Each structure stands twice: as C-alpha cells, then as structure tokens.
Image (cartoon, rainbow, N blue to C red; front, side, top):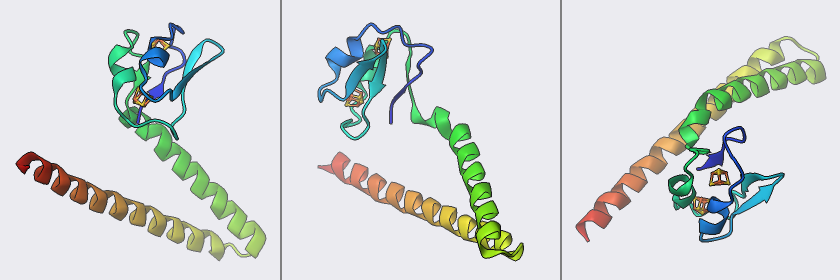
Length: 123
Ligand code: SF4
Ligand code: SF4
C-alpha cells in the first residue's frame, strides 16, 4: 500500500492527475492518499520523481513500535480496571495470541494469492 512521505513531497500534483480513481488529494500542498479509494495500481509510485510515494514495507518498524505501545497500554488498563497485577500478564498473553492469529491470516492469505498467481500464469 502506497503512502506519501510528507517531507519529500513538493506538491507538484502529478500523482493526483495520474491516479486512475482520484484517490489522491492535495492538502496544504502535500499529496494525501485516501486508502479506501486506492486500487493499488502503483501508478503514483511510478510517476513521482521525488520518490515521495513510498512502499508499505518501510513502515514495518513504526507499526511494530505502535503495536508494542498499544499492548502496553492495554496491559495498564487491564490492571487498572480489573484491579489485579496478574491481569497484566493475561492481557499480554491475549495480545500475543491476537498477533499470532494475524500472522496466520497473513500466511494463509499469501498461500492463496500465490495459488492464484500460479493459476493465472497457466491460463
Ligand atoms: S508526484 Fe510526488 S511530489 Fe508530486 S505531489 Fe505527488 S507525491 Fe508529491
Ligand atoms: S496506487 Fe494507484 S489507485 Fe492507489 S493512490 Fe496510487 S495511483 Fe491511485
């Protein structure tokens, strides 16, 4: 999924013109992608000569940091609202289960998509 590095965008508007589904708007002279409208065609990435349209994988460290911070805030809340320090640990275990499930969903989805790719190659 594409995203715009705000400090690299010069507000030229080329990506806005090239997006086939009008998913990009200019806000304060910086391009902003409406992900709910984006069809992941990659055009904006290809036309931006400032390399301001970035790939999703670059956000992995930030997303991990956000997940850990969110888990810690849930742990605090569980202890506060349930009044028991043991609830912190239970909450942590539930969050580990949650992210394991996310991993399984991602792995299974990739398997299915690879099957689809192989099928498409044959037809
Ligand atoms: S093409 Fe690049 S620099 Fe121009 S508005 Fe889009 S993201 Fe910004
Ligand atoms: S990936 Fe395609 S649809 Fe999505 S914002 Fe870029 S140009 Fe538009």
